[in-house]
Length: 156
Image (cartoon, rainbow, N blue to C red; front, side, top):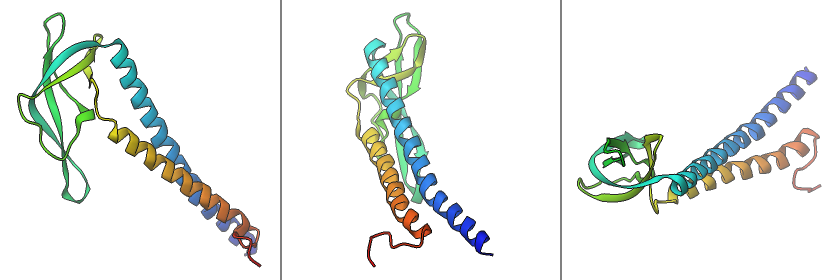
């Protein structure tokens, strides 16, 4: 019975530490990957001007909606491309006809980013990832002494 309780404590402590740490690392890596991809595309992409033709709606929690602009632009070869600019997601719709300077991947014109795009979403993702990692570190600091039967804050 005592062995079963000890394993249960270890399992719960591990989950309380490992799950938030895993989420934090995943969010941070995804944010860094998105930033590096946008940076590489900005450096190597082909410039164009995208014109908003419509909005794509994305439902969020609690009935909130965000709007992603769908833009149309022409490649250097004259091909018309319609794509969604995810880095311009907003809680207000984008006006049709609004122009955005962008760069696109010549091998995959659907991949485009706005020049001088917003970094707020990227920063928010990094902060969320760091919060999860800090929680995991705090939980680890608490869980170790508790499993050993000691006070985690060093009080007698």
